[in-house]
Length: 208
Image (cartoon, rainbow, N blue to C red; front, side, top):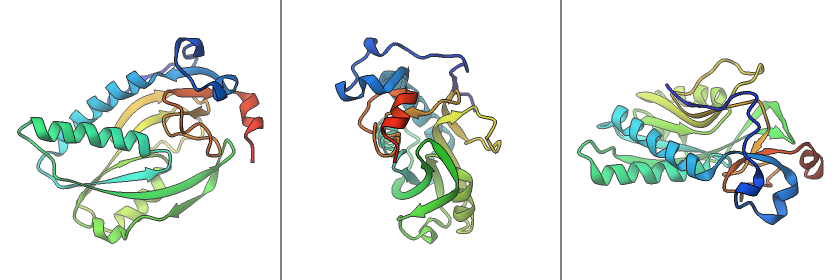
C-alpha cells in the first residue's frame, strides 16, 4: 500500500503559517501535516477502500479516542462515494477504546475499554482505524470475521516497531511525538486541527 512519506529529517512547517489555538502556541515545534492535506489523503483512502471492498458489508470499527476524527472524516467520504458511484458499500459502525500510552511512553500493557460485543462482528468485513493494532487483531480474529482490514492515518518509522503494517496507510511519519487531529498528550491537544510535533517543554508542562 502506497503512503505519503514524511522524511526523518523533516522539521515540518512554521506555526506562524497556520491557525493554531493561542493556548498551544508555546507547546508545539511545528505543523507536520496540515489539516487540508489530511482531508485530501483521507478522501483518497476512502476511494481505495470502496474500490477494494465494494459489495461486502463493512463493520467499521473506530479505535477511540485518537482515531475518532480520522474515522468520522473517512466515514463521511465513504458515504459520499456511496451516494455517487455504482459500486456502493453497506456500512455499519462500532467503537472500541484502547489505552497504551502514559505521558509520551507507549506501555507494554494495552487496555481494551468499552465497545459492543465483538462476537457481533463474525462474518463481516472490518475496516479499522487507530493504533496498537496487534492486540486488537488477536481479539477480532477470535470472532472469525470473513476478513479484517486496517486503515491507519499514521505509521511511525521507529526502531521500536514490531514490523506490523496496516492495509491502508495515510502518512509515514518520523519518530516524533505527534499531537492534534484528535491525537493527544495526556488528553490535551485533541482540539488542534493540524498534526503537530510536540515540544519537549510541553511534555513536562502537561505531564501527569
